[in-house]
Image 1 (cartoon, rainbow over the protein chains, first blue to last red):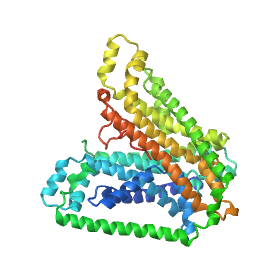
Image 2 (image 1 turned 90 degrees about the vertical axis):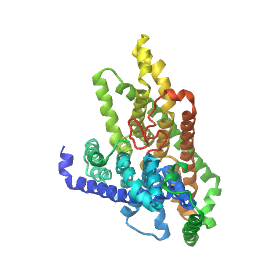
Image 3 (image 1 turned 180 degrees about the vertical axis):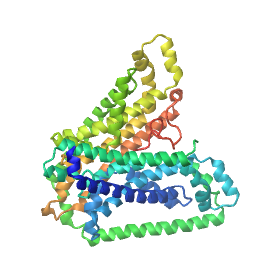
Image 4 (image 1 turned 30 degrees about the vertical axis):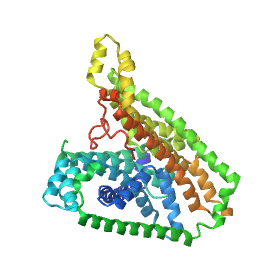
Length: 214
Length: 292
């Protein structure tokens, strides 16, 4: 028990680090995933190809390999940024592929008639997508986006191994201070559970507010 | 992309010209990007012979191959153990005895909510295991729990009549499970199981973080060798296609099985959780969708 109370600052710092990573990477993943999903349904062939390639490659890339390549590789091109930024980039890009697929299958759940009606009213592709189809797709993609973001929060643990301040990394500090490893991990586990349960609760709330059964 | 065409009209001559223009523009942008990356690669001297020489050495090739073999071995052990654990936990969750069911539920939910890496580090640091057992244990706990949910939802998705008919014939619960429900469920959940195995394969790379000897670790050894002028980028360029290729192969296989399953007339008897793509596990992520 006193592992937590003695090292509240360390744990707090790690917790906030994980939270920060999760939030920024989620925002990046949602934005990029949105762009890629619209690429994948666009009428322009080359964009569709790019979206498909992006998703296929990133979904099949081990995240550790991506972290390895981004965090240790990009600095060799003279691109020197804080490790946190690299971690957000890697996590965000990786998760964006999954978000893209969720959004795309969400778009496919919207009945065809909706798109057809929008078109028959003379709406353009952009209008059809943003005014008619996406608002409806949004409602049915809330739960899968939630589980993707939970996966993102869990994956952020990998960043800790690449010397980014986050929750899992605290075990090293505490290990050096000579605390019992088992209890250290128990509190780390509690930290992660807090974050994943919070995300799950948030999306449950969103689902209750906006969700529709289709 | 036929299903998405409800989003826009069949393009007329004007729109087709416009789309062609967009196409040319985006190809130009993508090519510029590619060219810029290539330029950067050349500019920072990634294609010098000094950096690529190590790959011509037999020792280095063997090191890489051994790493690949270690990865595959870790994958095989973890896959078999996760399947076994998944079966055990799913049996627990489907048990008639409430305490067993509760226990299995708690175990499954806990390990599904934990990052794999935390478990791997826990086994590695707190239990002081060797790297390979730690990696395998972490992967098994996580993927076994996920697979348990896949198995459970697969069995529960078998049409109710099948189960009722079997009980009506006087079969015991074990017989109903083994002879009626599981054979039908296995067909339907095969794609989901294979795509979970893709996750196992991807996550074996986490072994790199606990200095388990595997593919990425071998790459790191070569990349940090001063004699070869630190060939980091060449190593990434060699390793990632192999890694990504292996995962893609397995994903493709999952997709193939899933498509064959959908065509098979016998599978129609199984109301599997193909469900709406919007639905969530348990009960229905699209069975072949890889998970993050």
